[in-house]
Image 1: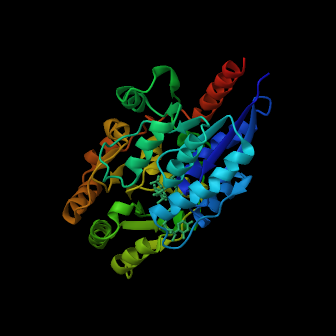
Image 2: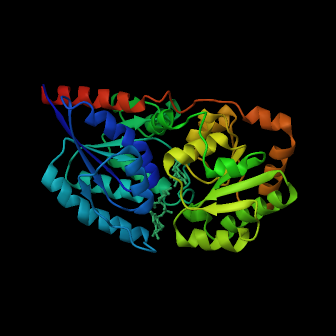
Image 3: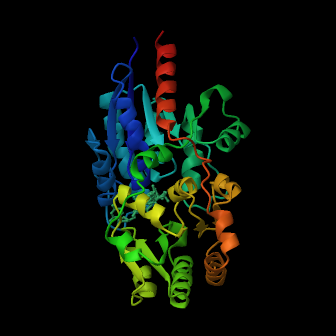
Length: 373
Ligand code: UD1
Ligand code: UDP
């Protein structure tokens, strides 16, 4: 039986959360796959947290993270350090995920060596190169060099077809992020922060997007602070990203309000359960837009565009931009209008049933057998 050598490469927290379930699936099928894991280390602590949570030990760690790293620096380092790994391993497939600079540069390195690239979470689009930046460029470029597309939704498949990608190379699988969520959320969960939030309505906050750093992020935090100041039964918890630029803005605007707590990034199991315990979520994250609908939590998306229209259609996400007054009004209205809240707070599952990794593995095994006949 033909066995496929699959090299998965990822570098940041969200890629790890969505690739580890796939690593586990492939490793669990040793007759079909030889599985190699390479992390670029674009993130360090935030990546380690996820690897530990899923008990994944990489075969390669390119360890590229630097304080204040630039897009050119990350791209150059991944190209330079990942190419020798490809040379040594000569995999049948390289699997990259989503839209990070790690995924773009690793996909490019594989393309240069004519190794087939399979793109997990292919076909997401805003068609706006400025938002999210540089992710829209990354995901479109990966789809130029990929030869297999694992699209999370039918909408993503349509985008790929519109761009002329061959239909028989596109597979709708659901999002592997939902696979992770299936194993983490427990109704009886409690920790220090669920205890702290007990008896209040909890707003869970994350913000890190590059294009929001500066005034837009300041606006997000100012609106949050005003809302917490005005509503004594509301608390906000913000597990903050490690980017020092984000930390500086958050501390300037949010320090001094006891009902707003900024804490270190949460381990993924804790964070998923914290989402489940929250009243609503305020975020500019991509992955959280996929997870929250499954949990029935309303999400205000502090961005001007989204590549996740399915959650908007499902009614659990609302795109609110980054203007302070609009954000303040959207938050206040969701907190005061119970009909509006109830209309958003229902579980919907536009991103799959939690078995995306299995579908991806099945398809890779099938393709490998066909190719090696
Ligand atoms: C990256 C991705 C973004 C993704 C986000 C998820 C790109 C261009 N951006 O953005 O698509 O949404 O990850 O969080 O690929 N840092 C640490 N420790 C860590 C992680 C980050 O100290 O574990 C600090 C470092 O100073 C680093 C900075 O954060 O230089 C920025 O990290 P970087 O990966 O460049 O950008 P993100 O905003 O995290
Ligand atoms: N997450 C986490 N701990 C946190 C904050 C977020 O584990 O403190 C998870 C979250 O559940 C989601 C992912 O990290 O799966 C989102 O990552 P991020 O917002 O950094 O990146 P994006 O999805 O925007 O690319």
